[in-house]
Length: 65
Image (cartoon, rainbow, N blue to C red):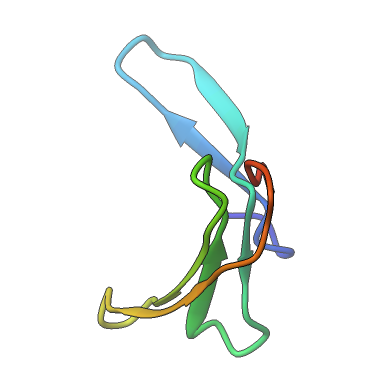
């Protein structure tokens, strides 16, 4: 994971390493992650527990980052 939390490098069995723009935000303390989705909702997750903390409603279109 890049220092800014926006890119992930992942290797696979086909011996290729790919860089992914994951379109999420990680809180400065590293405890929360925000992820947008095609259903127009941003979800806030607790990284340590995997629990959904909050839904953020109000976007009128899909969220890509």
